[in-house]
Amino acid sequence: MSSCFMLIFGGKVKYIFLIISLLFLMVGCGPVKSTMEINKAEVEIRMAYRVQASKKAPYEFYKAKAYLYKAKDERSYSDFKEASLFAQKAVALAKKAKLIAEKDQSGLLEENNIKLERDALDNRDESVDVETLNKVDKQKLENKKGEVKVDSSSDDLD
Image (spheres, rainbow, N blue to C red):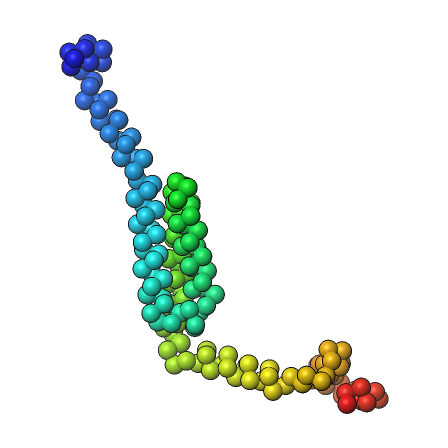
């Protein structure tokens, strides 16, 4: 049987076998690369979680998780190129979230958020309607510009 191949292909059997094996290897590169990228993204997201990036940089952290989910989804449909791209985006965002969280080890961002929430709650009065709040905000804005304007309809604020 091997003599039949030799007669048909002439001595190029080795080259044909080499080409066929290279084609099989090239088909395997997409799944391997995308899987490696997805694993790298999972590791980066875990590292970001350990430095509390989910609290200190929630936008970046959860967007990285969404990209990871999309990368796994694309891989399940055998779209390995897209899976790799989404996994790379997840890695970049997880690193960014980790960096933000590490910079905020003192907890300044959390303290500022708590202060902003307290100020918002302190300044909110349930009995005042939206129109009145808008009038007050406009007056404050005009006063800051240096235009002190006295409103004769101050009874609306009561």
